[in-house]
Length: 142
Image (cartoon, rainbow, N blue to C red; front, top):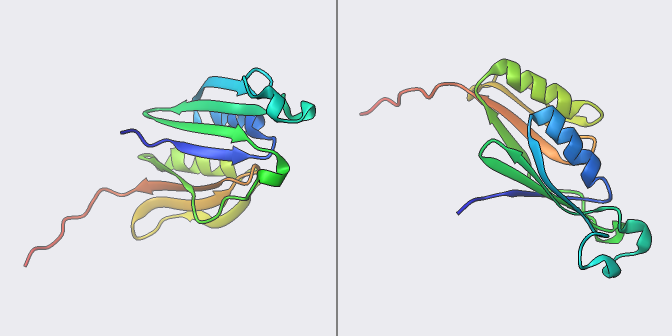
């Protein structure tokens, strides 16, 4: 089984995935517009240039995305995409990129569980957590 993260946008999927490709170091593997799909006639003509399915490869994981019409869109709630990295400098770079034009939920900082942890909502409305974990500590046995 492979778990993939699916992101839903209200017309900004292509711009978001191009931004994520550059900011996160991924590679867009697939972009399909509604117009190029067999379902083109199910959306208004002015929406057909929007993305029906996108796939961005990020190492061993994939982000997938789609555009939905404004009346079907709901702002993400109760979830975030967690980026786990090993290098505090990478965590800082990712945090800055995703926070640019977005909003900060928690400033990037050292915590009791990580060298760096922070949370943002990016300019496309997607919540992200960036975590640079510390080496695990030994648990004392009794």
